[in-house]
Image (cartoon, rainbow, N blue to C red):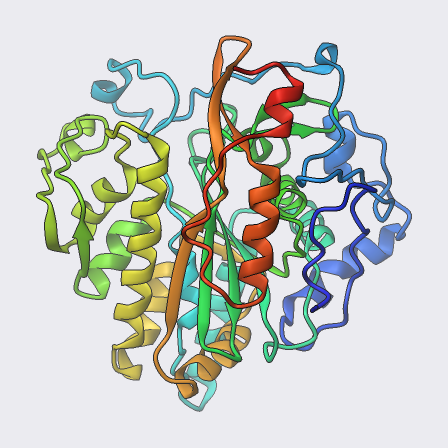
Length: 429
């Protein structure tokens, strides 16, 4: 079985081993700062979280992909999430909504299928350098980038399957002190050998146990340690090595969908959600009818944000995966000459470890392989109450089966959860 799949182990998680890379050129630059400080340095993010494990030390990883359960007394509770779609807007502040409504969506999977048309000459080189700088750095500090590269396990090339994490956070320029969380967390298995991609959604309310914080919801990982901790927790939960990541600003969805001329999506049920549509921020009300719909940017935004369903976040994440697939399909069908404009639109709101050259190399393989096949699924789980809060509890055995199926190139979309060892251990009914 390929080295990037570890799988859950009752004896603890096998430590990840970094690989050399010639398919992701940004790793060397980001790691140079780390080398200057020494490989034995404990990760600064972990120190900030109260953890003491040095980088490279094996981490506990019992069967079911959960870290070792701490005593209940170690829990520090979930920090309140005040981060919302537009806090600067007085109309929205008056709503005083609890929780968040999916302010970001991980549209960055389209980066895995973008073919960048780059002409010859100095102007083209400057354009590539500019986009590279925007894509790979964004608003992150050198320390943040170094921490992210610490947890990524690079593949040797884009000729073999790999896992990539897509993070849609609710962080905004005016929210830095408000404890931003990641509302969209999708891990994608990209297989250039079969021209396929499998999207695995991690429900935001999934219970995990973070070193130094105890039990909390998965989306709190981003609040505690940014993208680096979110990637680490996703890797441990699924039992796979994550090689690349992309973090996207929710606002970019409107511009990107409009740039490609809209997308066609099948809507399973009518959406009339005041919490998701533009009326929340004083704009026009958007209602989406069931059936085949051609969506512009604003409509796609509502489709991706709405949680007005009986199962709440489960249907929302399914809709997000639909939108990602539709957007990727639309981009693949566009003429090469239009793709630089699409990249330019996306680059301002997307941060990734992959350069334009990396994306070109990967996307060329997908184009040469014919039609892209995309499937999607969600971490199998059950819901329950713990200390008066609603959580999603992973079905450890079903998850192991799902990841084995995905790793083998199969369709795991029908695998669902029925029980949870962690929920039973905590006495959740």
